[in-house]
Length: 179
Image (cartoon, rainbow, N blue to C red; front, side, top):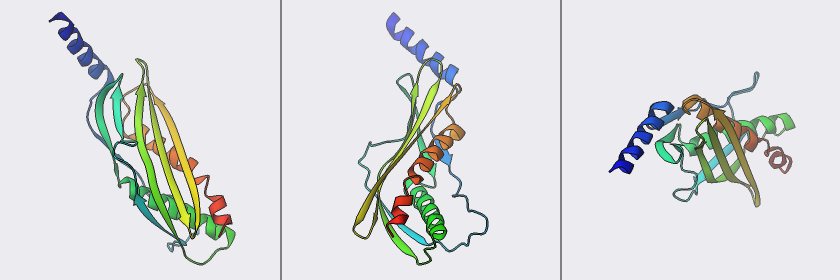
């Protein structure tokens, strides 16, 4: 009976030291618009969520113990659509492309998870897509990591996902060059 109590006490101490466990909703802001741009998007992106169940499921954990799920507002597919439409439209306008183009995206991975030690959490976001235009395919990935010494809440998770989007969008210039 003694080992059972020590495990229970250890779990309570981890939870108390790490803050309130529970699910978190990460509210993501819409993509920023550059000054002087119009509301008309040059890129129309259609997203198909092809993730397998369990691939990059978003969860928080503390030293191997689940501490809550992470969901996004808006949902992942809508985030990918908005970010890619905004960045593709910006790049197209900068290149002088003024016709509306349609792209399709297979969303293969989108998630943020935590990797913890007794001192800190690393919040790791991963996004993988295959962007298609005509017969061409462009695999794009992005990842972002944020370290925190306090409970990994919404702001830290949002920053990790934003970093992953920045890395993903850095792969878009060759797509626009191929138009």
